[in-house]
Image (cartoon, rainbow, N blue to C red; front, top):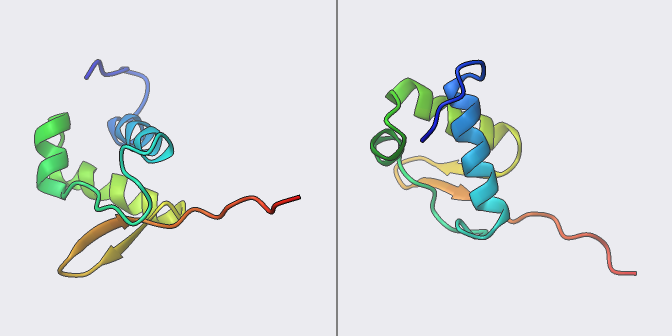
Length: 81
């Protein structure tokens, strides 16, 4: 990954993960990569990976199921007209 020096790494990884959720790479109900997997893919620390997952949960994009993993939440659908 080409890191932008003026943007925190957690923010850059968060943006990638957010885009993957939006484009269906990680569909609703799908499991997100583990902290270890994110560390390997993005070459980041476990603390950074945990922060990314925390921020995804805070944004309502993911939910953690202890002992199982973190999953993409069902995104609300716009009302039909």
